[in-house]
Amino acid sequence: MKNPASALTLALGLAGLAFAQSLPTATAVLGSDGIQRVEVVGGSYFFRPDHVVAKVNVPLELSLRKDSSLVPHDFILKDPEGRVVVSVSLSKEPRTARFTPTRPGKYEFYCGKKLPFLKSHRDKGMRGVLEVVE
Image 1: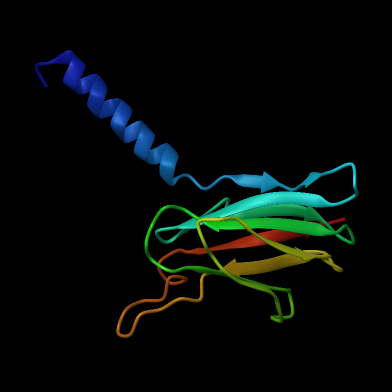
Image 2: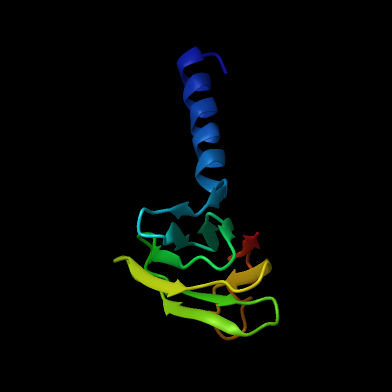
């Protein structure tokens, strides 16, 4: 590019896109009330964060919402045995789900939505893991 300002704008735009699509790991924060909390946002085939770390045998409160998209999404969390622990339809307004993880391990979460003849949201990358540790 001949224009340095255009090159800088392009570079910043690409960096912003990469940052917006990054899906960080989050550790649930323990409140003074003994409840650990974390916020998860779902959007166009992503969860942010897509990896949550929480402590075993400590109540966990998930604040769940979707970004501004019009596409419907939900949040399904299964324990290591595959049992559904949380099932919430996502909205722009935060919804709260509470449970106490009773054993360490990986708890899968995903969006269960799927349109006919298309890949499911889960297959498009809208999934993550809650890692429960000692």
